[in-house]
Amino acid sequence: MPELLMPSLGADMEHGKVVEWLVKPGDYVHRGDLVAEVDTEKTVMEIESFEEGVVAEYLVELGETVPVGTPIARVTGTPADGAIQASSPGAAVPGSAEDAVEVPAIAPPIRSLAHRLGVDVTRLTGTGRRGAVTRADVEAAAADAAASGPVGPDTSAEGAPARVAGSPSRDSAPVAPPVARAPASSAEGTGRVRSSPRARRLAADLGLDLSTVAGTAPGGAVTEADVRRATEPRERPEATTAAAPATTHRGRDRRSHSRPGGEDAEARDRARASGPSVSDRVASLRRAIGSLMARSKREIPHYYLSTTIDLGPALEWMRRANAGRPLAERLVPAALLLAASARAARDVPEVNGFFVDGEFRQSSAVHLGVAIALRGGGLVAPAIHDADRLTPDEVMASLRDLVARARAGRLHRAEMADPTITVTNLGELGVETVFGVIYPPQVALVGFGRVIERPWARDGLLGVRPVVTATLSADHRVSDGLRGGRFLARVDELLQRPEEL
Amino acid sequence: MNESDARAAVFAALHEIAPDVEPDDLDPSARLRQDLELDSLDFLRLLEVLAGSTGVSTPEDDYRDLTTVQALVDYIAKRG
Image (cartoon, rainbow over all chains, first blue to last red; front, top):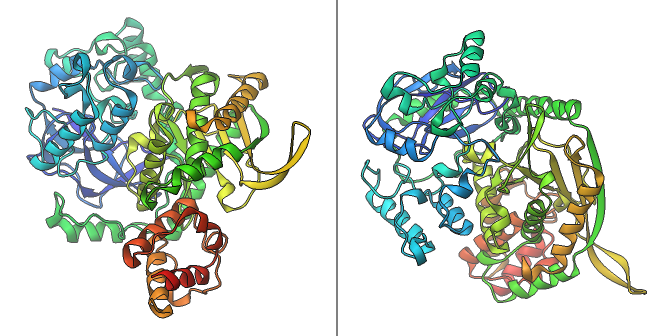
């Protein structure tokens, strides 16, 4: 019988408690649907299901603190489970090409839109050329899901129960956290887990139940590496969530419409009220950031590069683009810097990916982490998915959405877990140069300082130009200064031709 | 729009964007970026909220003059 487990939302998380249910017994949940809000003592984060089926019962009380890995709800599996599993073997490894090969007929901007709207593109029938899924298909599916509310097993669109926006679609929810593995459903049917002999031996040595390990080999088979990963949570990308939000202003952005479990409002309030105080939470977040950054500095041989970029053409282009637009559609310079960084990361892939198990795993997708400061203290770095394929306008829309949700404490676990490279833009508040510390297991961090006017010589003439200092902190185990320098030079080149971004 | 209405609108918008900024102890000479720590996205949202509540739409060319709470109040009062 599948169960939803208390996931690990950070390298140092040992306990968590459910403070709000987003589904109730009887609801049908898909993989990727948001099911609960979990308080980790650092933040409250929405968690998604790694199971598909009907929620049978809650196994923990609201506000009850339980260890990571504890079953929190029981889910009744369905026949559809096997079919879905077959089309998507195992959990994707970050940086694998899975999302590039699984649904070839979808343009990344459409996929990104689907992700934002919580639409599973694998279930859509495309109406575009050669069956390609179009923007209109995704929007129609999102509208259907919104109109029909909680979706049943035979509904074409995969929407989150009672809430459509923001449910990560399955193809972008990258990895099951080490403690919340989805048992391969094929194994459930047959009572055995497909696995390699070495994996079985290692699991036996480690006392690990193979049925709890998500297999990544064809057919969902469990490999030795899967077993190692399952026992080494600190080496997983989820470690980046250790710098998770210390949100101090929940409440204000609460959605007004009713949600499942609304009748438990009192219990929920009690659960929240019994949580740690704001100052405890900031202190706890500070410890988490400290421990993650200490690990980064201990393990990653950083090197640092810096270059000054003329932003004249980019800002002039942006000024013209913004002139005729309403406020809600205007760009800020950060959107251009992020778009250029994402494209440069695609062009210089040694900075994009994860260093795990002693080797670099380059990522074919660019999920651009954006460091966002939270009012009241703390920092989060959630991802803009497939940022290298987005126009500056799309990056801007994603950025606004992420910042609003980060500050309201409404980030999704998948966004926190899978940035492949992170950008920090401290310049907003005045500094000229950022010397960043890499978020393990990522291998590079890009920094932008403040845009300032400086005397600037060009073709023998001196003028005053708006410039920004771009920096790169990168991992010497993966790249050298030459490649890192190429990355910054590429960012510069891209910003000189903003109309091509 | 008179100044007190403009001030009320600006304070309300600020409180919405930055809930930790209490209208009661807000100094009108406070700088939006340095003192209230609004970043460019916060600033854009602030102008959006104000456009909704007062009908004043701010062109980008005017951004650079709007550095303090008082400057924003004056700007809204003049155009609202």
